[in-house]
Image 1: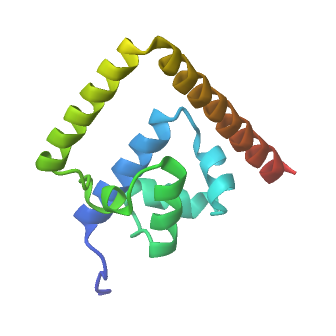
Image 2: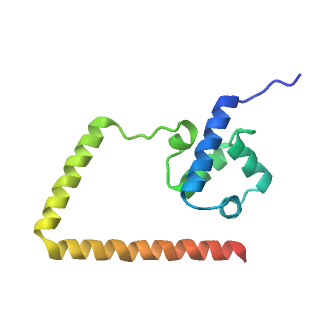
Length: 132
């Protein structure tokens, strides 16, 4: 009888989180495996919890989906309540300032949308390069 070297519950929980992240982005498994440079069988086993994700792939998954490695492994975010309260206060102050200064708000939003467009364009180019 082989001894398991990983926790079934943990690997299944990680797999479920990875699957939900992928589905929330509207991507299929093929798109993710191309970007992560991982074979289909391995990725499928990760999502179904049949294997434990190695550290290399935890890091790649976290970077790709824009979450922390802690979230991939535990499902928990690193945001704590005291910091969250301060964050809400800061955002509220910023929104008040922007509403009182519409030209500044326009400038900030224009800059944000321009950067967002560049990011989406770069992401598209990366996917095209992977296909080649």
